[in-house]
Amino acid sequence: MAALSISSSCHSKFFVLIIFLTYIISLSSNIGHVIAAGNNFYQDVDITWGDGRAKILNQGKVLTLSLDQVSGSGFRSKSEFLYGKFDMKLKLVPGNSAGIVTAYYLRSEGSTWDELDFEFLGNLSGEPYIVHTNVYSQGKGDREMQFYLWFDPTAKFHTYSILWNPGHVVFSVDGKPIREFKNLEPLGVLYPKSQPMRMYSSLWNADDWATRGGLVKTNWSQGPFTATFREFKADACVWSNGVSSCNSSDHHDWLSQQLDSSSQKRLKWVQNKYMVYNYCTDTERFPQGLPSECNVTIK
Ligand SMILES: *[C@@H]1O[C@H](CO)[C@@H](O)[C@H](O)[C@H]1NC(C)=O
Ligand SMILES: *[C@@H]1O[C@H](CO)[C@@H](O)[C@H](O)[C@H]1NC(C)=O
Ligand SMILES: *[C@@H]1O[C@H](CO)[C@@H](O)[C@H](O)[C@H]1NC(C)=O
Ligand SMILES: *[C@@H]1O[C@H](CO)[C@@H](O)[C@H](O)[C@H]1NC(C)=O
Image (cartoon, rainbow, N blue to C red; front, side, top):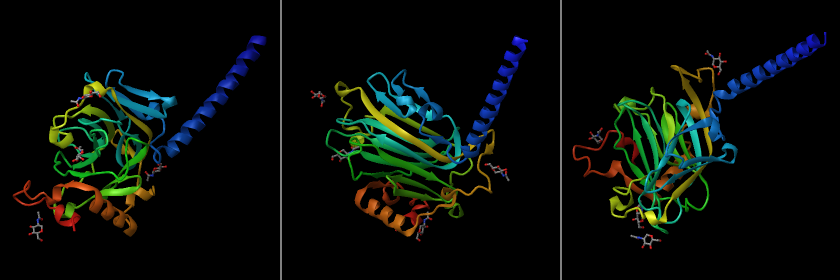
């Protein structure tokens, strides 16, 4: 008798637990399509390389990548996404970071991949980082634009964002758009729209090209070099087994977002004051004519 009553109370506790778990799972699947990743690196990413040089700290709230003469390190999101708004807080390698690149990008698989890049090119102490951006559609890139920043990116965390929706891709820094790549398919420009992408990040040595075209080499005696990441947020459509978590009955602001006139002003301000390189003005590089999107994006 005693045994029976214990087992039946176990059973009911078990039952309550199942109901509770079902409730939690249903909660998380309801919000799953809205916030596809948020603020826990253990849950959101996998460390992919670096043999212990990438570390998740503070219960998943902080991630550090480091680089020494032997290896860099990197991670990627567990999920794949097809459209979304991606934010990362990042504090770059301080001091002498010449030759070192911190990359934060979205990329699909295969030989005709799509890719949206932020790359931060380090520099000697006191000299400015360059923010390098690029857009690949179906394996074709060659769309570099580079910027200086209006702050020291090694002193504090700043937010670097990529908005990717059917109409455009926007790269932003602390909410200020620095670059827009529009969907100009009517002009025959390929646009990333059908291949799901993962978020990737890495810290690596690129002293063959990064600082002044490879003139300044990485000074290994100042290593190891460390960049710190926080608050990765993907407000995104998760792609899984060929199905998107978003559908036509969902209304995400970012899915149809365009640059309003004040954002366009800020974009112009950044491009006028801080742009270092723009492929769309590099006529020497494209003697056969600038790429078609350049006719529209640059005024
Ligand atoms: C490094 O600093 C130099 C001198 O200020 C500058 O010309 C260069 O653009 C900076 N960035 C890189 C990545 O070389
Ligand atoms: C590298 O850093 C060390 C230590 O700060 C310094 O003594 C040395 O001069 C640096 N080397 C170069 C090539 O700048
Ligand atoms: C759209 O997705 C929501 C969940 O995100 C789901 O409840 C709904 O049934 C889906 N609608 C269609 C038409 O697929
Ligand atoms: C860009 O515009 C110019 C002048 O309007 C035109 O001659 C040229 O063919 C265009 N280039 C491309 C690649 O569309």
